[in-house]
Image 1 (cartoon, one colour):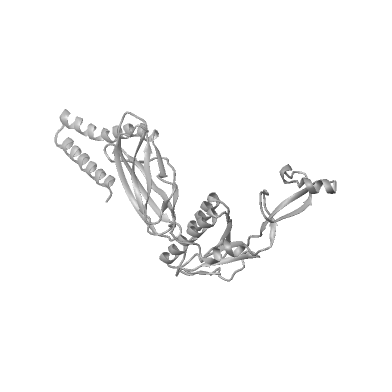
Image 2 (cartoon, rainbow, N blue to C red):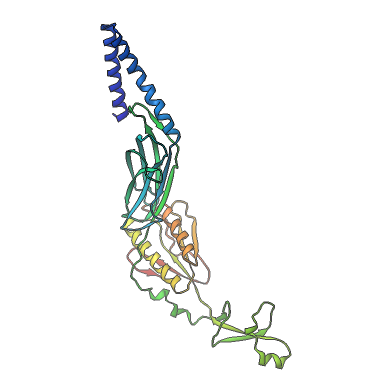
Amino acid sequence: MTAVAVRRAGYGLALAAALLFHFLDVGYLAWFLLWTVLALPLVSLLLALPVVLRCRGELFAQSSGAERGTALRFRAAVRYRGFLPLPQVRLRLRLTNEMTGERVCRRLTFSGLPDRRGLLGETVQWESTHCGYIRCEIERLQVVDGLGLFALPIAGPRSCAAPVLPRLLDLPLPPVLRGEAEAAGPLRPRPGGGPGEDYDLRPYRAGDPVTAIHWKLSSKRDEPVVRETLEPRREGIVLTFDHFGVPEDLDRVLDRLRTFSTALLAGGRSHTVAWLHPETGELRRFLVADRRTLDRCLAAVLSDPAPAQGRSIRGEAVLRAARQVHLLPDGEVAG
């Protein structure tokens, strides 16, 4: 039985006692007591309505994300500015890991005056055992009147979310991902030019910098000639993994995915991350060129469900003329 039901039952007993006293005693005290008991719920409701109309629920993550193994905190609060304290606020929250499907429900109850910012609430904590996007949703948000007889709903945001990120490991890049293996490729013009031992000569085009003009050779040919710096053509890299399996195995794969992807970006290497959606089989592919695109890629990875079984991307051709590296749950990589 809920607290509101208990209070309603108590009020029913008080009303029954007042009626019985009224029938047994016709004096003014019996009338006064009966009408007082009858009026109390209305007075309590009228006092609660202005409070409810000035309340609005708020729900937000206290950080942009947490690494696996650390706590992720959400703040559930009511914004209220008034001179009367809040009798009681009741919330029921549901927290769901969108990748693993893990779900917990929390009930919160608090009351009193808000702080200087006009907020009154509590913090809930998610123990980030596994990676995933954690969505926190309000299933019920109510203000209870002073007598505890009425639970009045108030408006507020329905949900917010934050990621539990894979860990950054202290691992070197495997040989298949190191840059030394790329130097044997054909040469191509270096974007932006700059100094270099290898270069090619071509006619001047509009927009070429003046510093790139080969003045000595241009004077012999009677036309501007540009020295174009060349560099080895880098082979594209595709990191693939299977988005299904035991959560512990998938955690290890995602740890190395984030670690290797971060190391490639630190070396100036853009790359592609790809996997198959475990339910639809659709190819999910993200070009990772900087920290922002890596964050977007991880958000998509952590939002997709991860069932126990699924279709493997290993052996699928993702990009032509690209080195495809598949991350395995046992810590190995397959080229």
